[in-house]
Image 1 (cartoon, helix red, strand yellow):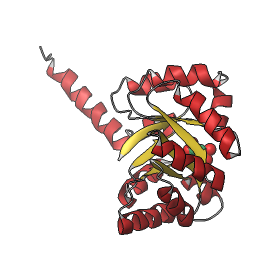
Image 2: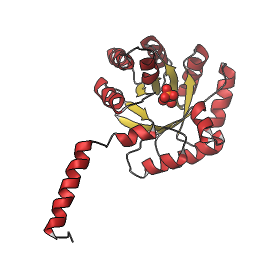
Image 3: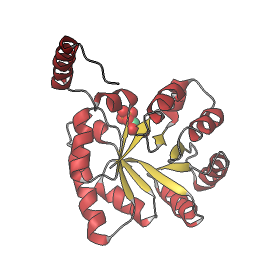
Length: 217
Ligand code: G3P
């Protein structure tokens, strides 16, 4: 499972890219607002920090408007992935953009039927929103499992990009369910490496090492 980071905060992206573990970035209008940056400028900067896809979302609601915005966003860099809403116009734009050779990410997916439609539209990625379903008392992970089954049944290439991830367990369960990618907020991504027994064990090793009086090298 690939790891993308779900943010438009350049400092956070740079820090994670430096680890060599970052494989892409997703943004959305709310994350652009949070960054306080101009969408064109910040997307260009982000595209320079990773070789992986950088999802940039259109905001038009109609097909023509989406195509115009997609053309502008696609010019930013070769690794821009056009993010489109799961509406009929969004799917129509997805089909056209995919056919023209662009990467596409169909977002705001809350049902397996919607995911099937996105696959038919040739989406590179489908973004099921786990956390927002969990917020409503619906098991978001079941949606990932259902999409995995449907895509495998028919051999669709569309990659399942688990989104709206809130916890370390969301990441683990997405991997078990067979998601191709998880897009993870920076704080959750950093939390993946943490375990209290790792900290405790390290503390004990370092204390014993100090008692040996030795140095390596
Ligand atoms: O990028 C879309 C998605 O990950 C948003 O997550 O936390 O706003 O539901 P959230």
